[in-house]
Image (cartoon, rainbow, N blue to C red):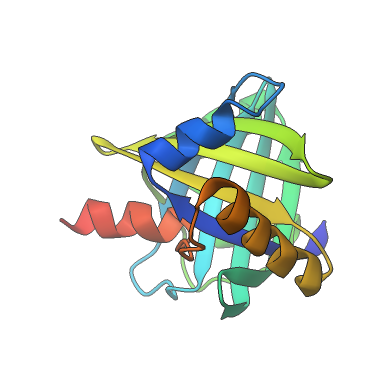
Length: 186
């Protein structure tokens, strides 16, 4: 499935995360993301296998545009079976699988490079559907807020609301996969 995704992504401090978490009426759900790559993979591309509950979804995301924390991406996803997921985790993702499942051409197979766990709390705050994330990877914990919306003006209103209500400055967040790759290189 192909999807154009537009979302606000803000990096949070632990204190800001706690302030927002107190407003949530839901508990955090674990999402495990396994990242895959190949030697010359573009920086604006991400390939992951995500486990959420009992479902596995293979995903390829390409950033198309980014401005003031609002990212527009071409996201392609395909739910796969548990058996197929286990197979991919063992041997990686073939170029043929990328083409057939996601409609994406890659020049070589992708190898598993590591894992990131996200504890995601999804809730509504003042009319916005927010995703509050605590990410744990490679001995690092970071925090972020995401909000998908097709209206950029609404995302800008959210930034203003967060600042005036909670004192949270809109610090644009780089994609989780990019932060993961940076940490992996260190």
